[in-house]
Length: 413
Image 1: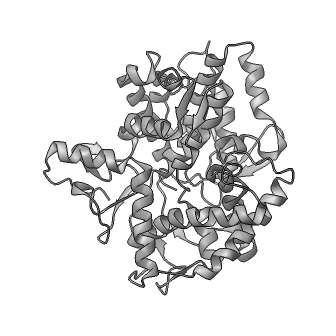
Image 2: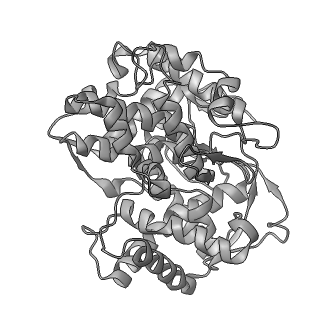
Image 3: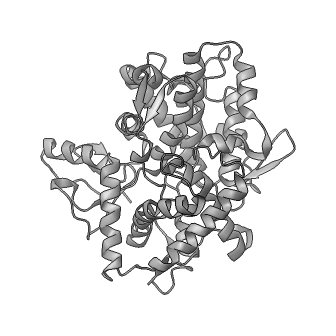
């Protein structure tokens, strides 16, 4: 439900928005709620610190099993494009042909931005059958489906240039178009289909409105020309996305006319000025940033400051903490309820997930005998926490369903 915005001082509001779009605020506020829960002041959760070692052992086991050679890549959308052992990047490169590094980077960024924005939870029923004959569900299915939609030119307005996502093409996307590309029908429903299509249309509008940020062609890949250099900081990529794409998100909450995106009120939250009371996450934007690291690096740009980004507060990472007993809910009917993204219980669960992933990472490194430089958080997540969350869920519930039932509009989870 949208929260009405009270009259505020415009300058103070913009200052608060700037703060809330930083991962410093994401971390600080997550740690506030973790300290509060450890002090016994949370009505939602108890933190059982002894179980962190159990969770770390699960993550280390998954990491060894999935990457026995110790070469652990970043947690990113590219891993979903590799689902089923298919080298889809090679398929895209073959379609692109001989192009320079910048042209290739723009195409890869176009693909990743659209694909990640479509990567909120698919629901338990939907599946995608690839031409390879393999069937994929959930995040892998959404990744593979969006990859093939991109190859088919679904996001381009120019049939002669299908391998792009441009403003005109995105603004023309309908739910029916997206449904056809994602094989949606009555027996194969995709959660939040209308919301996803609307999100892509808003993306097109934002791209068209800001050529200095996205280029005159209105492509996500235009950010490469704005940010590229010998080096780029991971947090600068995130801020570019948060500042440039803020208007695409549903207008749940805002300050000074600026949409806050994945940022939620919580009465116990301390903070400076108008930022008080808000808990930011920016899960999809951070997931997108993780997924853009490789396109920049493949184009010869060094990405620095990877650990400025936070762990992702979603149902696999957060589910790992619930299923291993690190987090013990204090709400009696928590497994039976249908939660909303803005419920205090969910806001706290996500915040505790962010803070505890920072504490889990060094324990996982110790289990694996690796340093922070060898195993940054982006690789801990991939090795990793997400896979461990899924594995534990599969052991505890049929089909590996998440431990929480959260209503989704396709733009948060």
